[in-house]
Length: 359
Ligand code: SF4
Image 1 (cartoon, helix red, strand yellow):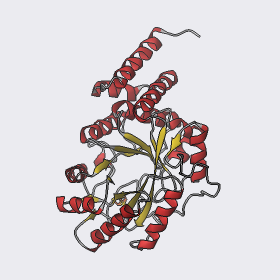
Image 2 (image 1 turned 90 degrees about the horizontal axis):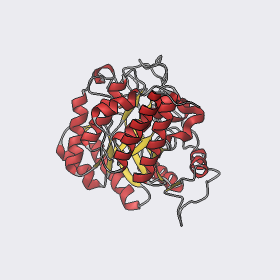
Image 3 (image 1 turned 120 degrees about the horizontal axis):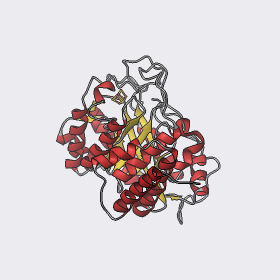
Image 4 (image 1 turned 60 degrees about the vertical axis):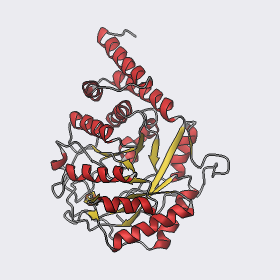
């Protein structure tokens, strides 16, 4: 096969950037934009090869699994245009009030049995303020922490004061998810009831409290490649410990219902670019994985993903956990439960947990 001069130049440049990241260096904004703009299949495959090396170097062969439980579903007053839980849209999404403590305990037991490292308590509301809801969430987090079953994480909306973040930390919350969702430039196309700055402020309160930041976004909402690059660099600047990447699965009744989903190779390229820009962060592949990647799902690790959300998402189903664990085994990767004393075998009965009533 002949290799053109342009092929060789792209090949060399990707290798130079990959070697620099492996040596502890970073890519510049211009270099990041160049990576996101690669459009030729052979260049994208080259990018994946290097992203895989970077993942192996910084994260090894152990994949972190996390899952979520929707402690309060639906009826959110915000208007995020991708979200089925928004009361502003006409999506048919389940609603329920705050779950009882025993329901959260059951979710933790199931997560632990599946080898999941962290369980996130997720609520569909605008923000978390001082009051009964905060008291209840803190009680749930403390109970989870004391049980030692799974790491207690949370995703409970915006935080408007340092005091709330400090209380979450004191209750045992180790990691809090609050996505930037997209770039600062594109954010107003996604949501008009709060701002990108509101989200950044929440992350600062969490950081100040000593809670690890889990923040990423949703790709495929009509953003440009520059917007994706902006998001990756904003997360780098904020010091995101974990970066969940979701790929829009358009839901009927939401304003984004008619958007065309991203193609599998474009999704893999996005993951790889995030890996180059954020080599040390956990990159977790979350919503939209199975439906958008189809047969290429297992390629996410070669593209640089180091973590996986298993079990159902907030408003959409995922593939069964047993299938995810089999995928990891087939790839020669391990996970938290795949260790001496852990649930080493793929549990035949590890069907996906019931769809948590609602985001
Ligand atoms: S993404 Fe969160 S804040 Fe936005 S509408 Fe959905 S539940 Fe509400």
